[in-house]
Amino acid sequence: MEQRGNHAVVLGASMGGLLAARVLADFYNKVTVVERDILPADPVNRRGVPQGRLIHACLARLTQVLDELFPGIRADLLSQGASTWDDGDFAKLDWSFAGHRLVRSGRSADAPQILSPSRPILEWNVRQRVQAMPNVTFREGHDVVGLTATPDRRRVTGVRLVDRTCDQETTVVADLVIDATGRGSRTPLFLEQLGYQRPIEDEVKVQLAYACQLVRIPPGVIKEHMIAHFPKPGRPRMLAIIGYENNTYMVGAGTMAGVEPPRDYDEILSYAAELASPRVTEALRAAELVDEVVHHRVPSNRWRRYDKMRRSPDGLLVVGDAVCSFNPIYGQGMTVAALEATVLRDCLRRGGPGLTRRFTRLAAKKVRVAWQTAVASDLTLPEVPGVRPLTMRISNACLEPVFVAAESDPAVAAQFMRVTAMVDPAVRLLRPAMLLRIARAQRRRPVDESAEPRIALRTGAA
Image (tube, rainbow, N blue to C red; front, side, top):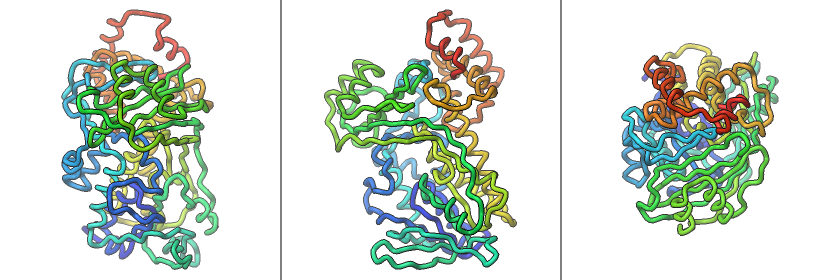
C-alpha cells in the first residue's frame, strides 16, 4: 500500500491502540506504541486494564473486524479454549431486556455468532500479532506528558515522554499521533496548552457499580453459553454469566442509578437467586472460586466531541474510550474501537489532506450509533437522570413491539441481536418480512395491562 508518512506514534497499548497500530503499520514506515505499563509476556491481567478482571463480551462485529485485521485469530482463540455460540440455538441463551425475555427455543441460521474469550486471552492474542509486525515497536514504561507542534501550532509533530524508571524526558517526532489512552486521556489538556479549546462533552450519568467473580464449574452443568438480565424500570439491577476458557465462568452482578452493588460472592448469589434459574443458582453455589471478587464503578456515558471542534491541529487523532466511554453493560467499547480502526484504514487508503478532520467526522458516525443505543437504553430507567427527547421516546416506543416479538420468534430475536451486535443497521428491523413477523407476534400475545412491558411503554421505555 502507498505510504502516508515515515513515523506514527500510538499512545496506549489498549485494544483501541493495538488495532490502530495494526492499521498504521500498512501505511507508515515505522509505528511506535507508547505504554506506561511493562507489558506481560503471558495472557494475564495488567494494571493498565483494570476492567480486564471484569466480565466481558465480544460483539459479533468486533470478531468480524478482528478476523479482517488478523486472519485466523478466531480459530486461534477457539483452539485456546474460548467458548462460542455459533449454532443459533436459543436454548443456550438466557437474556432479558427491559423486562422482555428473549425466546428460549428454536434456532435461526441468521443469528450472529458469539465468541467469548476472556479479556486477557483476547488482548494477548491481539498484542502478540501486533508485536510480531516488523515495523512496529513498543516503548513500555513511559508516561505521556505533552505534545509538540509546529511554531504556528497548526500541526502536532510528536510527543513528550517521561521514562518511569529514571524520570528522564524525551521527545519522539512523528508524522501522526493517535491517542488511545482511555477514559483518562489528557488530550483535552494538551490541546489547551497548544492554544485550542477543549472539546465539549456529552454526558449521561448512570452511576453503574458492579461486582465480578471468576468461578470454575464442571462442563455441562450450565447449559447456557451466556446469561444476561439487564436492568428494567423499577429494578436497576442486573446479572450476567459468560463461559470462558478451561471451564471458567465470569459472574457479574451490578446496579445503576447509585444503588449499592453486591459486596461479596454471597450477595452476588442473592442476585442470581432473583434473576437466574434455580439450576444455575445451585451451580454457582457449588462453583470453585477463582481469585477474589472485583468491584468497578462507571459514573457516566461520556462522549468528547472532537467532531464538533471548530479548530483542531492536524496530525492528531483520538480513538476508543479517549473519545467515548460507554456504559459497559452493552459491550460496545472494544467494538467501537475496532470500527474506528476500519475508518482509519479507509481514510488512509483514500489519502489526501485533512486526515484529522476526515477521520474525526467519519468515526463520529460509528460512535453515534453506539451512543444512541446505550443512552436510549439507560434512559428507559426512570431512576437514571437525563433529558429524554421526543425522538428518543418515539424510538423506544417503536422498539416495544420488537421486544414483544423477540420473546417468541427466533427470526425476530436473531435480527434484533444482529442490530445490537452492530452487524446490521437498525433499519433491517423495518423490512416487510420482519414487520409482518412483528405484527403477528402482537396478535398472538395476550393483553395484560399489569405486565411489565405495558408499564415500560407508558414510561417511554424500550
